[in-house]
Length: 202
Image 1: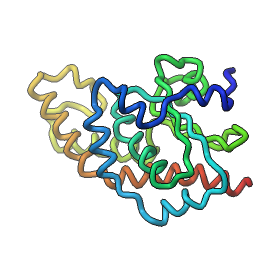
Image 2 (image 1 turned 90 degrees about the horizontal axis):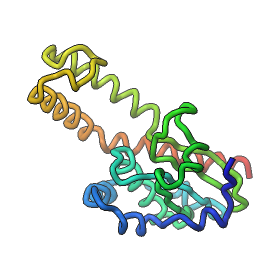
Image 3 (image 1 turned 180 degrees about the vertical axis):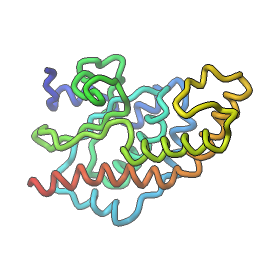
């Protein structure tokens, strides 16, 4: 098992450095960052932390959940001043990825692993909140119920004709975009629960 200590953590890049080396989707990351609204009560919870919290993030610039959720962490870190974020590319740091597999088998990203100043792990956020996954599944069921032409819920989209598949994708995207503000709040809530656990343990 890889030891995550101060020396290894320091080899990661900052959020700004990660954006600088992105080869795609930087515009989407920065748009999401600009649009994230953080409730003052949530921001106060991060600002009132005693001592820095180190956050190791595993990410890649092609991943939709990274594009959606890393900007939230980046903005929280920038506005609170208490989160020290270092980002590691998943595909170049497989030893780290193996420690944070989703359900013990999936290389889901982003991963945000929180550590106190002695590098004791406080908690881990993987991919997206369960509430967001559940809402997306309900939306997919609803879309398939309303549009029989999209086939049965759970059937592979690749089986659909190209034009029908494009319409299904557009419908999914429309509903997700309507949910962005809610989903962002769910991410902030999940991250706040992790750091408040550190305060309770202190």
